[in-house]
Length: 299
Image (cartoon, rainbow, N blue to C red; front, side, top):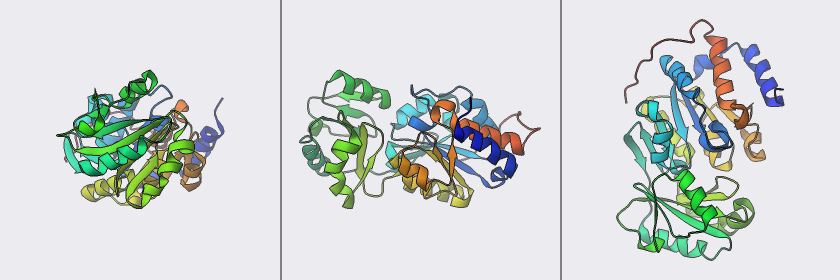
């Protein structure tokens, strides 16, 4: 049985007859809770859909709190032709070409780590350009950290990490990020980018390092406007992207704040909501053209 969001999508697609696709030149999608299912898996059907979008000159960006290396692996068959926003906007790339890197100095990071260590129930991932670093060895935390950070090193003390560009501090909160660590770290927002990125995750990065700012940079480089941009998201770290796109979609499983700010709603990630929206729009606007060879974009 189709969900309420899926049924609404059927009506909307039939009503607009694919007119949205006349405008869209850039699509940016969050990963966890959005493009990926609850197991963190990407449906293999994404790849032919990506090629159909590419054929029509529509660019696709994966926008995530995940590590760039992990995104490259997830999208390996088409990675050289994709756009990436990683580490919640502290890093962006076109294929394997770096477009943006916003790092923090070691002294600043050391001060943040000292404060986080005083919060009960938390563990820290220090995210660098070359690798992520962890010092806690609690099995649940290590398992979760390695899920999102494919390049991850265990160290004795995070303060001893040297020789890497430090992009972000990710806080894993056993007691819930929104209830425990975020209220205690919210005061940092005047000087840093602070965002809840999942039920147990929150991120701290340099001021201005967010998905929306990274998306704006990509738009400038491609000559694409917010009026020509579509985004999908589910958590508060996706909010800056919503402000940067005319066609903003909240997943049916999104937090209430994102659902209230988005222009549209997509079926849940477990229903493959992103691919449902894109597939139905392509069907409505290009009913006779759902196959063909792809042109490779130039960066």
